Image 1 (cartoon, one colour):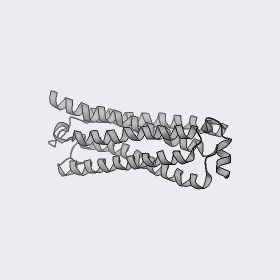
Image 2 (cartoon, one colour):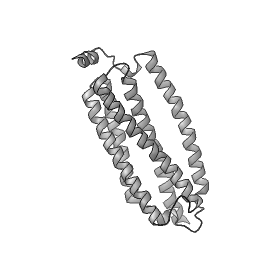
Image 3 (cartoon, one colour):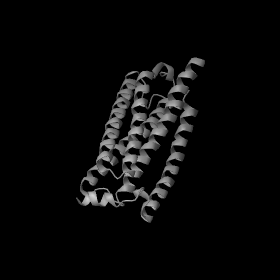
Image 4 (tube, helix red, strand yellow):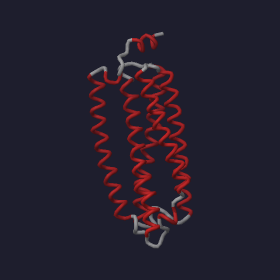
Amino acid sequence: MATHHANAVLPDEPEKATLEGKNKILGFWLFLGGETVLFGSLFATFIALRDQVNGGPTSQQLFDMPLVAAATLILLTSSMTSVMATLALHKKNLKMIQVWLTITVLLGIGFLALEIYEFVHYVHEGHKISTSAFGSAFYTLVGFHGGHVAFGILWIILLQLSAVKKGLTVVTAPKFYLASLYWHFIDVVWVFIFTVVYLMGMIGGKVG
């Protein structure tokens, strides 16, 4: 009953209802700015080194595009379920927040499973992190993103468990909002990875 009462008096955007919540959101945007710079440097490194295969397999010989496309579809779908969780947040509906975030987590796990399978396949094909500069740059960039996905999954699960006890309040709402924002960020980064690493890699190989 206490949770229902708390939800009833929450404002339309509970994540911004307090100064602390607003400050957390602002600080998180600054954090994402730093993350953008970091990923940008990894992209620049990859672009500079992607042709240095050192006798190992090239991108066009290596990449399993149907698998990568499936992983991309899964992650983009998880972005939509994350949006639904945010909409449920604005409706103060904790039950639906939990439902949509659970789906988001399951899709994220599915994405990671495909990525791990992809890495294992590439290693068997002779594409290791130590094989070439291309291998090092590839695994560093894609693996770093995968680490962010894993962190996001853990973060959301912990928030969900915490919300079971604490409910939806002006204190917990910003945490849900920031987790969703973080998830959108790693989805956007993946779109760039899909384009720069995979699509450009395949096109570059065909041109070459």
